[in-house]
Amino acid sequence: MNEEFSPDDNVLSCEFIERGLSFQLEGITACCESTMQSPPLLTPEEINAGKISYELIVERRKKLFYAINGKGDFDPGMCKTCSRKYRAKFKDISFEFIGKIPVMNIQHYTTCNMRCKYCC
Image 1 (cartoon, rainbow, N blue to C red):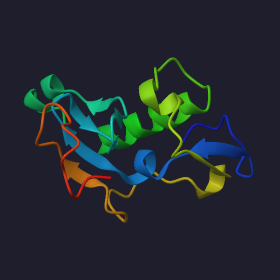
Image 2 (image 1 turned 180 degrees about the vertical axis):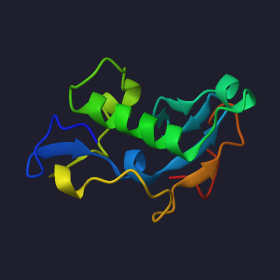
Image 3 (image 1 turned 60 degrees about the vertical axis):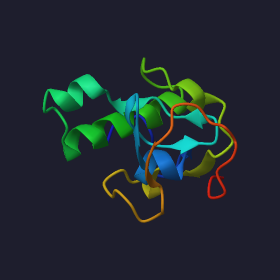
Image 4 (image 1 turned 90 degrees about the vertical axis):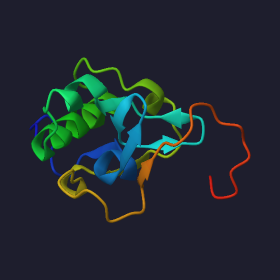
């Protein structure tokens, strides 16, 4: 990980940026929460070109993490204003595990009609 933060620094994080995976029309994202979603970690073009890999997902998660903490030039999109972010010690942040929380989902709609009984 980038050494811009000390292990005991308080940083912003999100369980979805660290572990989430969502298959959307726009590509693979970290999350899709109600009407908000993170920027794509991988675009459909990258996926179709065979560029999908564990290492690339981890790299893009890190870019998004640093963006919500004001580092780098990556646009965090809706993550910037999302209320799911929390403060944590930098040493406790990990991007290596995919899963652990039930946040892997597949988008099966194009526009929300607010009728799903199972949607948050």
